[in-house]
Length: 113
Image (tube, rainbow, N blue to C red; front, side, top):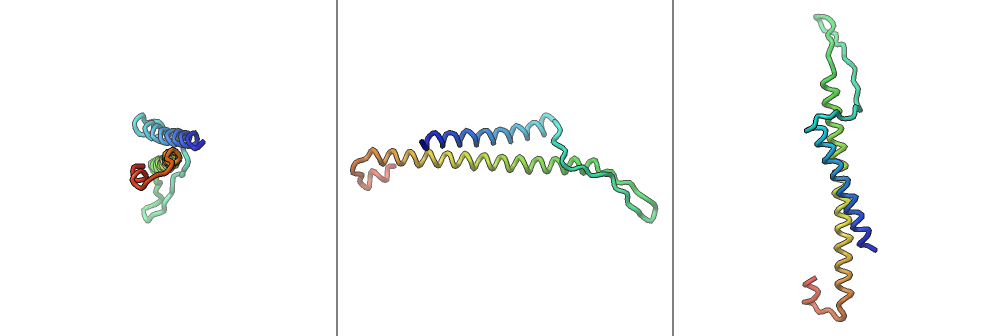
């Protein structure tokens, strides 16, 4: 039973990792736009020389790319953690099966496991 769950966790972890990597590849290599989360409007700054208009378009783009990278790194780390849980389940199942096959294990046989 743990084998099925372990392989399922590994599969889900790999899907999450590949989703994050493909999303990052599309955003940076294919130049597809990232989702627009932050929308800042242009600022008017009053100086001694008069009003200045500060465009925020580049800051919007930089903030959205930063948030996208942060989200993809979170998805990547979650996928790695889920995959690790699946590997640990499989490792524990393998040890349990090996111990169940031995009738009277000696210390040397246990060290081989």
